[in-house]
Length: 416
Image (cartoon, rainbow, N blue to C red; front, side, top):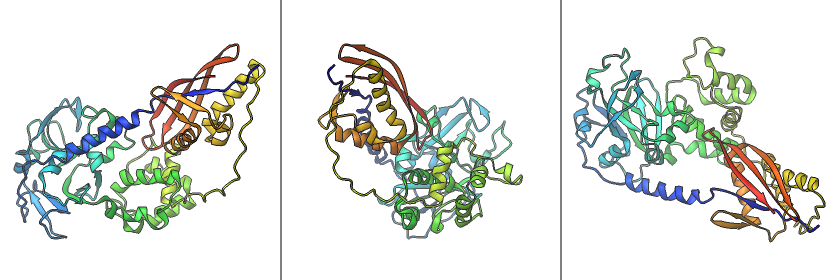
C-alpha cells in the first residue's frame, strides 16, 4: 500500500483580512469632524459635563465644561430598545461617543476616553472600542433630560449622565466578557487621554514581558477591574475601591482560591462586600487574571534544538492504523503540541483551504498563534471513508476565545 499523505483543509482564514478592512473603515469614520461646541471655564448647572485631559488649547490640569443644551444640539439619534434602565421599550435620545469625540477640541495624540462617575467608578473607552461597539451618551429617556430624572417608572436617578452600549445597535456587544463595565451611570466627567501614558505601568517593569495568559488577564483588568481598582504603580483606575493593588496581588499569589472566590461571589466571603459579582468568569479567565495580577513572566525561550531530520514517509498498512494515525495527529490540536502535529508531514507538504494554500512552516505559525488566542480546544472526529489509497474524514474543531470567553465551533475535514 502506498504511503498516505494527509492534506489538511482549514476554513475561514480569509476573514482576518476582511476584518482589518472593516476596522480601517470604522477608524476613518471616527476621524470625521463635526461642528465644534464651546467649552466653558465654570460649571453653572449639575447637568454641565466636565471635560479634562488632552483638550486642544487648554493648559494641562485645567478643566472645562459643556452644557447639556449644547450636547443636545449636536447630531443625536433616537433608539427604541426593548428594555433599558429597568424600563420596557424606552425611547432614548443619544449622542454616540464617536460624534462627541469629533465635536470636542481634543489633542491629536488622544486615543482614549475615560468616563468618571461621582461615586469613583470609571470606564475606559479606547478609540477602537468606540468605533467597534458604538457606545453612546444618553441625553433623554422618553423625552426627559437629566434635569428631570428619574423619569416616570424609575426610582433611581442614573444622572447626570449615562454611557451605555446595546446589542441592538452592535450585536457583538453580547459577546463582550464584561459589558456592564462599559455602562457607567452617574457620569460627571470625561477625560481625553493617551492609552500608553495612562496604562504605562501595566506594560512596564514586571509587567513588561508577561506570559500569554497574563496578557489576556491584563486586558480583563483594564476593561473590567480598573473600573474600581487602581493598578500596579498606582496605574489609572476607579477609586470606588480602597483596596490597594499590592493587597490584591498578595491574595492572588498566596491565596488564589480565596481571590477567585471573592471575584466570583464577594458576598460569600464578606456579607458586607459592595463589589459586583463576576460569577461568569471561567477557570481559564480567572487563571489569566491571577497571572496578570501576580505578573507571571513569559517562560524563558527554549534552547535552539538541532535541526530535526526530514520525516520519513510513513507506510500505513491497514484501516485501523490509518484511523489511529490521523486521529492522533488531529488530537494534537488539543494538546497544543506542534511537534506531534507537524512530524506527520514532510517539509514540502502543502495545506489547502478555500482560497489558498500554506506550507508547513506557515501552518506551524498558525498553530502557535491559534493557541495564543484560543483555549480549551476540542477535536471531534467523524467516521472515516477509505477507498483504496485515498481517505476522507470530517471533524469538528471547537475552542474558546481567551478574551471574550465565547465558545466557537467549525466543521472541516481532512483528505489524503
